[in-house]
Length: 151
Image (tube, rainbow, N blue to C red; front, side):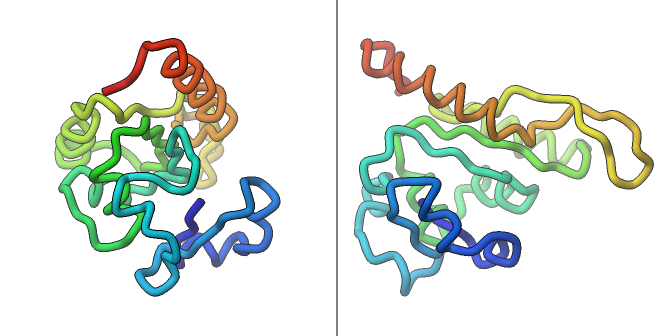
């Protein structure tokens, strides 16, 4: 599992260790101890969940950028990638790059849920759904093991 510098403002690396296989690295070139990311893998993972998938992350991934170990890993992986989108809105530019990214056969989005906007307390559909992404990952992994592999 990897954590970005921005994410570490909200959760510590030590806190995440308890949620995964204990292998957590910062998304920095000098902290990527394993070379698995060069082959599109992170340890023994069967799937990649991006939570939250910020607008910056979605755009960088869609544009083919690989300016961090995690982005490089996601650019070359064949593993399923599930995005828990945390987008501030949709316009033609965002929609264009998002659609390009979703053309990749191994990229999908978490099932949307209804959330409450902080600005005006209105309800809005969002992809900021970690439980839904985990359930989807389990289904994809089970399907892969049964021969219904995502290419």
